[in-house]
Image 1 (cartoon, rainbow, N blue to C red):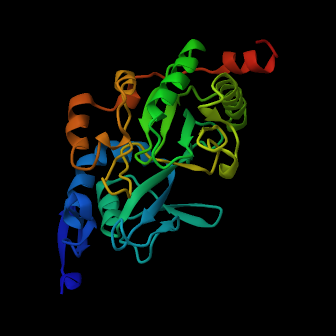
Image 2: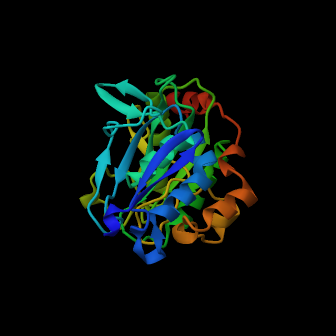
Length: 299
């Protein structure tokens, strides 16, 4: 009977049908679809900010996080008139630029929002550099230690960064950029940093691409940062039991050993209201001098 329940809401002048509002999407947290849509609306100023002008991939869980899932790149059909798309390589991506579109996707049980590294308006020149610390273990107690070591290394190179939890197992270091370097040039910097970390801390880091050869080491993924590839968007929920959210952190929180599960759909709004968007704290950086240093062969 509950599967037939539906209603409509009016959002910014657009009527949106909500189906099965009492369906449990995160059973452990008691988060129904109705609660999820409320939480998405609260997150929307920040989530939309980091998804607009990006190619969007969502992960849909029609029966909640305990059920089956699938990736969605092409715009679902039928789509309401207020949904706009952008086409890239024969894929019609949803333009996530408004609250009605976000709630429409939420109603379809799109629980995760992954945004492309490249922007629709200027694909060749990224506006941030991302170093992804990806644990080989499902639960990695050393992840904040690893993030702190990597952040200290970047700082020693004159590169300030903001740590961001993936909301799953890893941490990403985000560096806003002056738009002057290409993805290939940034990969050279990433290779330098990743190789240094693996050489300096061989019991903690690796740059081995094949997971079966990594053991329990944390993979410094500098290759993922490339045109056409995606990252979990800041403030996106994750389809994990605790409804964790990909959350930027203060470095002091990293030093104190923050847990990736500390921030979730039921408490992230209060943090954002209190702290604001921590990704705004670091101004755009020029990494040209670092690239020149690396390519000159000086050490």
